[in-house]
Amino acid sequence: MTLEGVSLALNRELELNEHAYNSIKKAYAQAFKQGILKLEGMTKEREKMAFLPRGSIPLPNIRGTAPGVKIIEIDTIIYCLPGVPAEMKKIFALTIQPILKEKKGKFLEKGFNFSGIGESEIAPLVSELEKKYPKLWIKTHPRIGLAVEIELSITCFNVDNGEELIDKALNELKKIVIKLNGKIKE
Image 1 (spheres, rainbow, N blue to C red):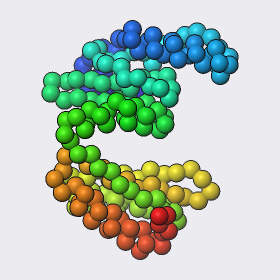
Image 2 (image 1 turned 30 degrees about the vertical axis):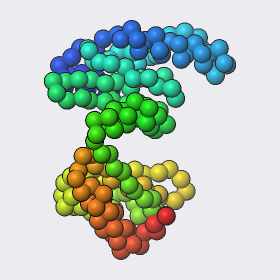
Image 3 (image 1 turned 90 degrees about the vertical axis):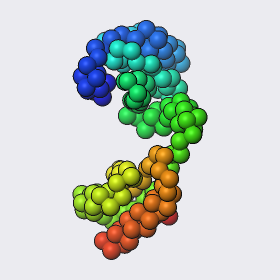
């Protein structure tokens, strides 16, 4: 759905990318050969992963099958990654992060986990903090488990005083969590 949306937004047709198709086909053949899958060959659903916005560059996915995608639109580069966290993180680490470092950009990310507070309870306070720190991207990620656990992460790219801003915002968020009787997991 992401690639369909990006395709529509950029007014680019989705088209079968041969490189992506061959990579996906190879991954499924290997999984079948190892006995991981019972169904051999390419299906319509498997083939769908090889349809990328026209002019896209597929990015290798060594953890799964769906490729990441790099799209250059005028002077902007757009990366679309699979939603499976392990796949997304691996593609980012192997492909995108080296590009960001090469461009001399500084990417910062910090966060913490806490429990005892529902995501909906802290969301309005996170939104207020985002207004106070517009250069930071503050995100909550609910975790599945017996207790409600939320990972809070703050990200910024190429912000001169990014480390200082992140630390200030983190301290404020920790105070909010404590005030709401949440438990911070260090």
